[in-house]
Length: 190
Length: 190
Length: 190
Image (cartoon, rainbow over the protein chains, first blue to last red):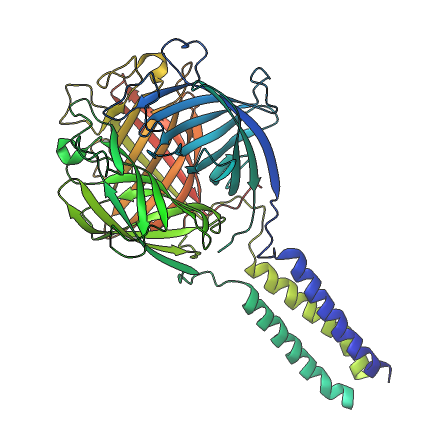
């Protein structure tokens, strides 16, 4: 009698055990909450022939009709810019940089500001060592735009995710500041 | 007696439950069927000094021995081309574009046509919003060649996979059309 | 009586079964041992105006203050170099190449040698077919530095991981040799 009563409870217990263990250890496939989130700013000062001391970026490729000290007409189509920009935790250019944003952008559209980005965030402090690598299209006139985290090293080993870029400020065609909201470890949409 | 008979069935039941649940929820590791497949065409018209209205691409970097209106000798080695090309569902340049292919290619070999590609497919319609990012070597003389999907955003959040490129048509050194067969969500070979 | 004794063993048996099956089939999340490891060398000979026969790389973009036959001052800041370099199994430039390293680097910092890399290892032998794609920051003055494996095709389908670069030798500003230790299939740090 005792035994016969206990068998349904045993099934229930094992089912619960199974279900719970499973739920704890297998990530849900359709959640999109990131595991880790980082918000940074970076600051780009483009060389214009007169600011070589402060410049953090320079035009190194340009189309046939342009030169390398003035961003080209037609929405800078064809300008390739290389940069080594300070990363800060707030929106102040003069805050102590916590790393460098290094890479390039290349304006790729004639009728509107749009660029293609390939760059890294490089960290080398006692708190944070390693890099995050990014690539993707940057339709600059959109308030926010997403690029992919294509990998990471060190503290960001094998990182994946998305970074949302927002132009936080700009001054003429020399200075701009980007706010970057990095969301790592998200699950996919496929 | 009743109880003793039921125990083997219980084991069997739980084993089946376990096995089935497991099989349903854990992807098999060596399957290579993509979860999602997309076939598109994109159309590249390189600026040649005379076609600025129609051109969708321009040479913006060139080696010391070349210029930016004619693709360089030695299989265009060293030419960096930036593009913003229409994507269509069929092979007709004049079909309504469903998105833009934006990025660059850079010819990287002296003795045969070969390029390195970094680009995105950018979609912004009611049906499809987001981007797919690609990178990889493109040995143009091979009938098909594979580049990597290195990430995605929006409807393609965190996409991974492979894109098979095929030169579908070309006219002199000004126009070419690529067929792209994107296979997303494949499992790996490592 | 018999039945009552067997129930605890049944629970134990099922628990063990569950635990073991689980352990065998789900990879541990925090292990960082790569599944596959490859060590290669590649050899870069930069065009300097006189070595066009041997050169495997050329400057194709440069800042306003520089040209394309001599690497620029200020730690080559702004120079974009495209390459098609032989990959060898040992550190001898004249060993039979087993593939090609193809892509670009772009010096991106004024006060120290640092570059941003986008490139592929391309294999097309009977033993090995496919490609590995890489991107990331390369602070050249560090003894070792890591870039990301951002994807792979063919035998490296969907590869992910990290490649550790080391400058193995250099001669003036014309030749350098990199040792690359590719670690694939690592788990992440996020």
